[in-house]
Structures are given as C-alpha cells and as structure tokens.
Amino acid sequence: MVNLKSLLELRKAINAKKPTFLRQDAHRNKSLEKKWRKPNGLHSKIRLKMRGRRVMPSPGYASPRLVRGLTREGLVPHMVNNLKDLAHFDPKTEIVVIAHVGAKKKVAILKVCLEKKYPISRLKAPEAFVKKVEDTLALKKKKQKESEEKKKKSKEESLKKAKETKEEEKKETPAEEGKEETKKGEKSDKIKVLEKKQ
Image: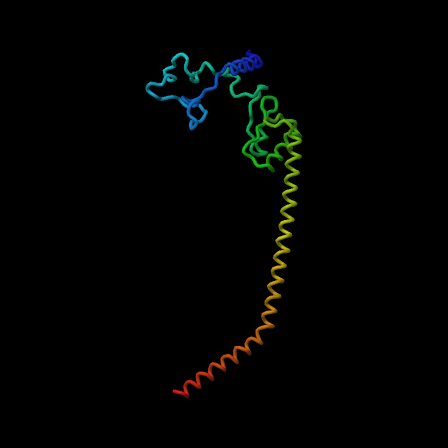
C-alpha cells in the first residue's frame, strides 16, 4: 500500500520546483493580468515551446493523483454551508472548510465544530474569532436600540411642536379674519364711490 506521508512530501518537493505560470508578455504589459492564459499566436515562442522561453503548464508538473486536492495534513476539505452539512462529516479523513457564509451562521457552525473537536481549516484561533464576532454583534444590537430610541424621541418632539403650532394658529386666526373683513368693506366702499362718479 502507498504511504500517504511520502506522497505528501513528494508533492511538496514538486511544488517547490514548480515555476510561476504567467501569460505571454504579462511582465511587459501592465494591462495584462498576472494569470496563465494559453498563447494562441501563430509565431508564439511559448506555444512552440522554444528553449529559453517561459514554460507552459504540462502534466509533468502535477502532484501525485492520490494526494491531489488534499490539505498539508493529508485531509479532504469538506465544504460546510450550514449545520446539516456536518451530519455526514468524518473527522478522521476530512477537514471543515467554512465558506460563503455570514458571520452569525459561521459562529454557529464553529461552536458545533469546537464542541465535537472537528479539525477546522483557514482559522488559527477559532475560539478568539467566535468571541470577537459575538462582541461585534452585541455592539451592533446596542447601537440599533439607541438609534431607534433617538428616532422615537425625535418623532414625539416633532409631533408636540406640530400640535403647538396648530394651537397658536387657531388663536391668531380670529383676529386676522376681522381685519380681512374690514379690508373687504373698504374696497367695496371705494367701488361704490367710483360707480357714483360715473
């Protein structure tokens, strides 16, 4: 039977020798991304695999098939998006990878993993991370409550001001109505005088 440890070491050695595969002229042209793209040019020296040029990816650079896709410890990454995904998890051969999940869900998954002592990938200190997220969420809730209270207070104040202004307008309106009547009466007298002159 093949020893996994030796294959992992072999993969490490292969990866150490593996060059960085860049697309043609990526080092020359800033607008080109530093990723691999197969050259399709008719006279491309890289496509023709000429000596002294950049090398293309080929099967010789691949890691051993049995170890391909495994972590450094030799565990298979198991994607977890919710708590249901942990039901079919084998801690001896697999490692938990939490991705594309919000902070609340991530904390819930991490708590279950810490209880059952499952290996977790991409997190050095999961306990510290859980504590940090819970603190930030608590602060967020506190701020939301404060802002809601402020909004309520401002609404109440604005309603009180509106009522006060309405009451003031009601008090002022009868006096103004009397003035308008006298003005209207004056206008009518003038019109009568003009009519008499004609």
